[in-house]
Length: 261
Ligand code: ATP
Ligand code: MG
Image (cartoon, rainbow, N blue to C red; front, side, top):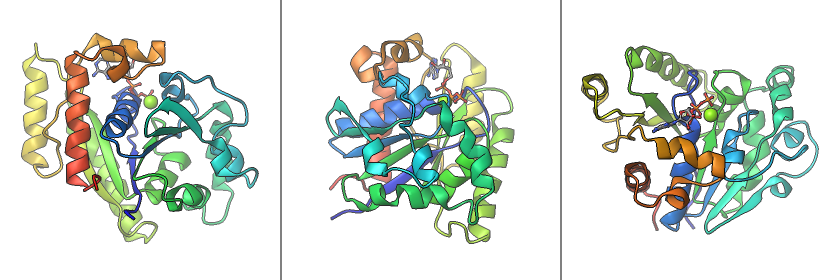
């Protein structure tokens, strides 16, 4: 049986396409018949609502982090084949403070999620993080095999990248997660009408040629509309360039990490 590969989409910067990528990449992997679990680790719960689910008090990883309840009971079958969701709700915000008071505070999430990772039910896990390198994001990095960085095609994109990459090095050097690596960089919100987008992609490609994914996610209004209908881009608009892009990204990731049997 193939093991579970855990990806976290973490980045200190807000509004760069983390959640859009987490939801649609997870849906894209599920479309490839890869059993996938999407974990919403952001108290804003945008991934939860993006898949069409209401926030539900007491239903997130939070109670399990606090030693209550079982993680399996928190998971939602999304009604989509091969795609399950561990939702979030606002209580999870308290974890930022409460985790900091625990011993081994960086390894709490990994312990809470272990039954899901070890169950054999999932080939891929995608974790959507809040826009800060706080306790939740750091715990996700400690629990993950690969960091995926969503990088918006904008001026100074590389500067923000440096910070998250150095966090990966520090966690590895400190022995918190000795096999964590940067799985890849996903360029988001590419605007075909501007030279800037093209220049930014070229700059990142020149600096990190083996990390950047070939697939670039275009800026398209349909990707921003889909979550308000609780739909993935595959459900909302089958023909959109954003749909093609997330399908290609899922294929590229399945290939790079050997997710297909
Ligand atoms: P946060 O840091 O708040 O969690 P985020 O990094 O998860 O934000 P998203 O929520 O995915 O970012 O995207 C921010 C906004 O940009 C949202 O309104 C989203 O719908 C929109 N958006 C994301 N990707 C695209 C895209 N490729 N084209 C157009 N709009 C997009
Ligand atoms: Mg988000």
